[in-house]
Image (cartoon, one colour):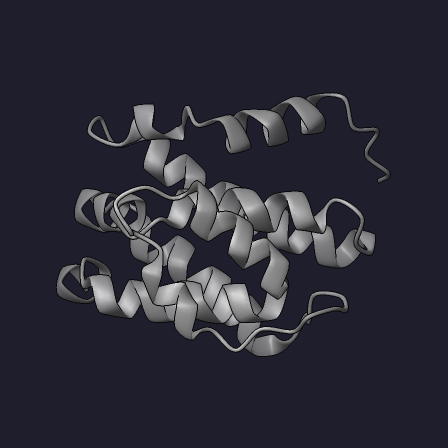
Length: 148
């Protein structure tokens, strides 16, 4: 499992699927402009919609769960997730979900925040969470009125 979870290409493939289901071309263009060291260049191969809403399907649910599980108790996977730009992608996905249907949004939030918690538990990656897009999301969530 460690070998799979720290394989950058496999993590990129999983993240690519999340991007293709949750983001639009303009979102990815913004991500590419924000990223440094060409860490997100693999997203140039994504098949993206120009407009529309995120697609919530079984495969997206599985992919988000797989990413969360791969990083659980695995510092190598957390480091690889950060290295391939996963934090920037997740920040964009979390922001994009803000106006989606409650069940869809909550499922995506749960999986994404679970993975971010795994990153926070690793000494070498916890400070990587202190990026502006994630801080903006956490500020938004701290003022959000949740409906239970």
